[in-house]
Image 1: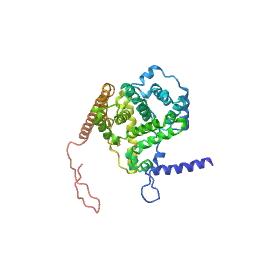
Image 2: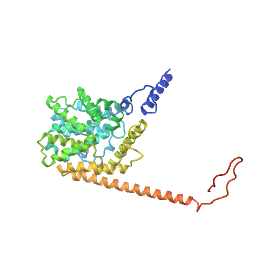
Image 3: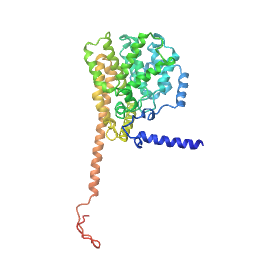
Image 4: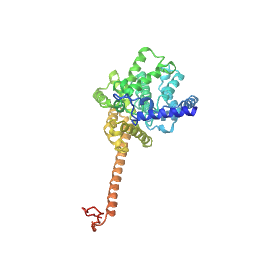
Length: 415
């Protein structure tokens, strides 16, 4: 009986699977239905996986002083740390920035918050829990490298770090363009306005709404409102369609930047999370390049889905058109460097720490692009040479073939 039930369930799921892939047409007529992919196409963590990581996390306590100092640098290698260890490192950040004491955050509440955050990041190639950690670790490093603790309030630092932790919660692996074109639940819910970023922010406050994971539960109401407003602003700022708007606003206030001006600090906080979010190329190449492979895999998955569903294909995600170096050279030149340079204009120490490594990354990918072009040219020339050798010295004509009975020969055959 159990086998029959399992077999029937598999048949149902296979039909449903084909439907959302676009390979099976539903019988109902009418306009395109909102895509439910948001629940189905994302690999969520299994209960066993989550519990195993939770147990390991709760058993870990000590972090050496050497690791604590390493954690403050942009050269930190995320790849050598497991998820449970990453949660411990995030806990260290909240501790070493004095948030535990300043905001009366109970250690067990912080642990529960970090565990819930871990649980709500999905098993997708790029926008996963490791990416959350990388972005948060870069934000943490920027706070120390620029001595922000002496320039802005602790509540603003807490806002920035927590925004980084939560900035991609429950990411589906498909960007806003896909959400809008596929008319997904998220696009409908948020009226096509930054659907993913609005969702990340909403999930963050779902976690914070629970008493056992609300790290802000001992704050005064005004403090909480200020943090909530700041987190929403920061997470929504990670929508890349707003990149020029935010960067231009920062450039306009830079000559008169005032750390006592709330509006100026709000823009700086948005710039800092944007820099942290796309900071992989500021890291050593052995750390950064695997992240690019992960990102391209997620891009290719999306463009494949767009082709299957008959949606507009995002050009920079198309596996038939994009290579590793071509995906990076333009992005570094026109997005990363202008952003990083403007931040370094406010904090000159960052020229050495994040701008120079990004320039080296650009050189690396430009050389890779040239090598691919040379390889392509050589391959084309070799193919032409091979075809030339295989072709006969000249045309040879033979006698006309004898037509079959009842047929007339009308052409001369060239051998």
